[in-house]
Image (tube, rainbow, N blue to C red; front, side, top):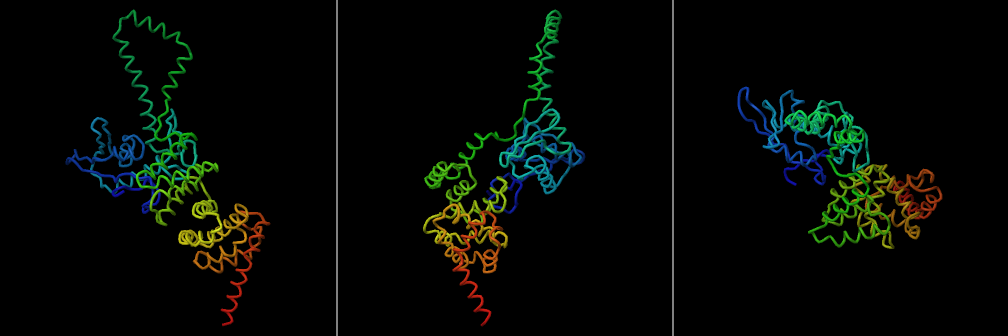
Length: 397
């Protein structure tokens, strides 16, 4: 991915999947004829899924200079001499306004150009509505879209002028009695929607995700694992869940902790997950609920440590464990003290966090009802007692 930049998101996130080429500029001419050429505008527009003329026009508006994209030569030109770094900042501004979803900030929006506005739908988070901007480029896009239909109409008018006067009068007479339905059809054509992005229907989203899953695993020997995950998730009705997507990401290559956390953050933004839901997704993805659950926690201690640096996140993890052993798999309830002990020994949870959770009112639990919280705490009591006694001995020494 060398030479590519993130489209939105954290600029330092190497695992971020939305990429575009770095802006390349070249100054040509001199004096009054000097101009700045955006060498790779077509490639940038392709990555952003937009018309090359739109970011080109945006540069001109922002810089107060004439700008033009020539489709035949694929050259984007802005009159004047401008620094590449300044134009790169303006490109980021264009992306913020016209490319990123205003809710999840991912470049997954589909735009539909109407007569007076642009409607947007986000394939990632489902946000939809009118694009909220008063930037002058909006007027240019609306006008550009309107001229597409107008050009066809003008061509027909010119052809009519070449015909005989009698034929013109006859056609004009026919035009008077054109059915109202035909007029409505013409108006509809003028409002023809321009799609910048992918279809947002549930069927299209499912097909896109399944294709993405296969692409992630092809050619690296992991396809069998991914197929098994998809088959198992489909049987449980979770084929498009965030947990399934995270499992497939981890199974489709050699993933480090930073990459997994980055993918988890991406899923959180795309699916609109809160913190408890995010941690639940990770826990479900990395921990198999079987009789060896303590070993599962020990094996995944490092990645759990990466998300429990803050006290609130650590407490949420304990709440997720309450749900895991008290609701999802009650047969593992007896292993609660061993799980908590493992997380303490692996330094995922500290003593203060564990005791604070244990002593908190059961009804304050994030994810389970009071009865479940009481039962889980009761099972954890042997380890808590040991922990408190060890603390007392340390203080007496």
